[in-house]
Amino acid sequence: MTLKIRKTDDPILRQSTEQVTDFDDIDFQKLVDDMVETMRKENGIGLAAPQVGSTRKVLVCEYKGDKEENISVVPLTVLCNPEIVHTSAEEINMVEGCLSFPGLEILVKRPKKIKVKGQDRYGNNLQFEADKLYSRVLQHEIDHLNSTLLIDRMQKIDLIFIGSGTLGVPALSMLAIDPQYEIKMVVTGIAEAKSRNHKKLVNPIEEKAKELGLPILRTKDINNEKVVAELDSLKPTVAVMADFGQILSGEILSLPKLGIINIHPSLLPKHRGPSPIQQTILDGDKFTGVTLIRANEKMDEGGIISQVKVELNNTENATILKKYLAEIAANLLLNSLPYYIAGDLEPVPQDSAGVSYNKLFKKSDGLVDKDTSPLIVERKMRAFSDWPKVFTLINGKRIQLLTGHFDTDGELIIDLVKPEGKKEMTYDDFVRGYHTKLTFHG
Image (cartoon, rainbow, N blue to C red; front, top):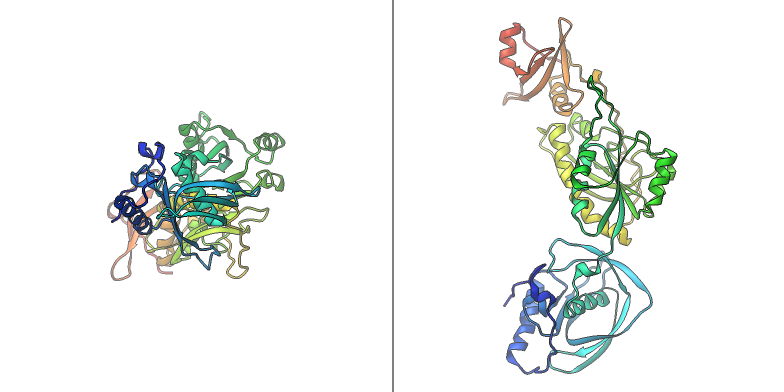
């Protein structure tokens, strides 16, 4: 039967284990069978007795291999009273998970090869060598038998986060609570004061960093000598960038040992440039996504580390879509980063086919008139929901078109508008008050 997996702070995970001495005990043999069944049902590749509530010194492991990922087979192994008698000098970093810590995947450095001895489930003496994944699984499960948990093996990764806009907020939040990352600095831009009293504006990344108690470096130019020197002194392993808006020099790009991972909200190489979300909506794309690239000195041309694709229903506006992609990006980053650091995710050059670019939109791009296609008007209302907004001119006055939709007959229906100097109102109220209708026939 399957057994309950003990999780995280269950005290039995820290208890000492006892040598198996009675191999003929029916209860012991049943425990072994149940452990194998539980491991397989939970899609694990290893399981130690404390993880299922027993203090006996026994582990099981098995993995059938993966030809596509070139991962070797781990034979079904039942090992009692195991002892590592030799380890190789060569150590390797790999990402490890644990059934007792669901969702946690961290980098762990272990000897590449080991020699282990113990008994099989029937008490027969065993001694054998294990390499690569087999070695790692055995070391992981032997740790459990010695009351050592995955979190005890955690390596701290020094990291810099670079960003200013909302796209990176979920990623920053998730990195900050992940115990394997040490955020040494949050680098963010300085927003220009727009109010009359010229108070400093706080951007979303700075606001989140303050909330999380993280060190912050505000700069108008990340390539400034003093900024470069300060970041260099931190000796970061890697940096993460999202929605920053400044061009990075080669000097900045080379500071982190493993470079800078840029979060881009499109399916690169499509929609390179500063406004991919808006362009996605304007083009009526059926799919979009998030791409992690290793940044280089060319705009959004770095090698692809990982990518996720999502389907659109063509009703999303830019504000909602950006928020949605920001959450996806955070999860993609946290799932990809350990494997990138371990060297298991190598950046792949982008395909030169299918490359497209977008521009930084201006206020004038929001202008529509009677000759504009209703399809373009509707897409612009969604694409420019945050900025620069969509507007038309009536008697020299701007009328913002805030929301609209197509009815079942395919006719564009304007829902909300905001006349210049007035509060937003329904389109029906606008027609009654201004005695005019907005029509588009392009």
